Length: 340
Picture 1 (cartoon, rainbow, N blue to C red):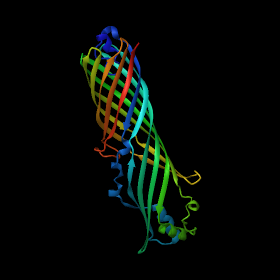
Picture 2: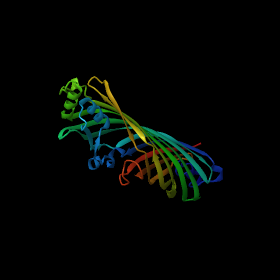
Picture 3: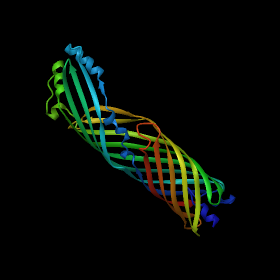
Picture 4: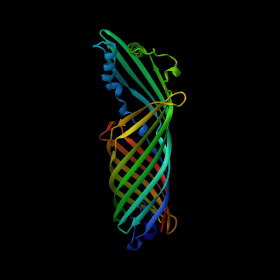
């Protein structure tokens, strides 16, 4: 039975081995994986912290054009509210496990895609002051987008057997999300400030006709997110029949997601790009648990089937989100291990 358990592959290959079994195990894997990143909201606290900021460039232009030295333009972003779906990924890939009776290494690669819908509502005030006269313009912006997300996971794990039922492990993991979105954009606003500005600059007054304004009614978005992780922990093996082993793997990880750029194109009625914007999201460093539970079933001397549930929690230490607003990745995977 020792020989059968060794070809377990990614997690169990260190469980029961002999020096003669310095072999290679390969196998395909499929999984369904959930990512709740879209559900985090602690970066939308602007409603509480909104401040009025003077638009120095526009203020200077209007002072020069109008001759009013006491003219100021203040902008206040009042924050946002978001409603999103978590993303589910159907993923496929494979693993290669190699090593000897004590130390084994596993390389795993998985790729998949998913889709999520997001609705975002935000508001903005623009206040123009001249002497004791004020003009206030309020904008309410609603976007409804569908995002296509491509996911790539690469992982390297080292395991050292310390007994027949216990091993220590460590490794590194890389995740990449490539996100593209498209959707509708609705802007509702009054035109008090724009009318005053048009009058000062000698331009045509704004019109209610959306097409004449060239106001965008669709958006296209694009961004890429990467996460680099290191982790370490322990694995326990418990045979529960002559041909089956249950396992538990518990690790602690430290992860870093570099700063990223969120690109948005605003499109008109005829799909013409009216303007482009870029938003820089802060880098995020996080820690958390990474655990898996499952079982492996020995089918022949060279083939085994394993199923597992894995969950990884990311508690932010820095970045745009609060510590308690964790990101959770979890899902079920099924794999076949083939000993060469």
